[in-house]
Image (tube, helix red, strand yellow):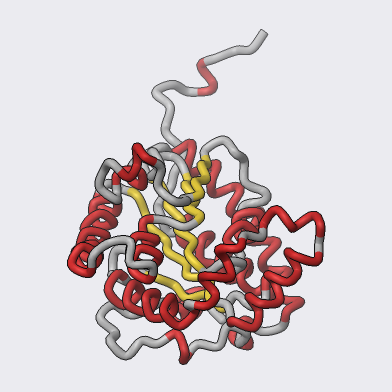
Length: 273
């Protein structure tokens, strides 16, 4: 599938009130073609992302923010390792947003997020994000309904500010099935090297699966905009998840009109002795 069609297939259309996650099969990746071809394209995309990241850093005029959201075990860490495995740490930042600490909680909910957005020339990766404040905060009733309602427009305004100041925003919702999540949680219990990833709270959130799905649907419908659209990525198959995101990240960087800076001198003016 051509990248333009791939993006259109996965993008949540702004204002689509009929959007529903239940209509999207987390295992259906036939649109990618064969797994063999998708994996080969992924390897090419990963290497190209490395080159484009270097160009973004050298250009220094723009930035890219990649937001990864999804339920526990959906593959946020795996996406970061897989898609950006060849990219240099120079020019990249990764922020994992957890429960706000005392200082963060004393500010507005976007304060800690704005502090982590990329400077020009950088790619920033968010493992969870400000959307936790209309997901977990909504399902767990951490904030009142009227406050949650205000946040959708505040998020849209915040992301508009970023795009208007030369930061491109990519938002990926890693969509997995409850069955797949159960298998991955069990793997964390069975594999001693993955025990550290398991948290009892994951099981509590699992009991609220339908509530979280509803909260995600609202956030995706309210906050998929022309300037910062949401992409719903079928994530039951890890190779497909990574292939999709790598393709979109590569295409986005290629369309950012990046250039190596012109020097105020000519190389021929210098002689290395």
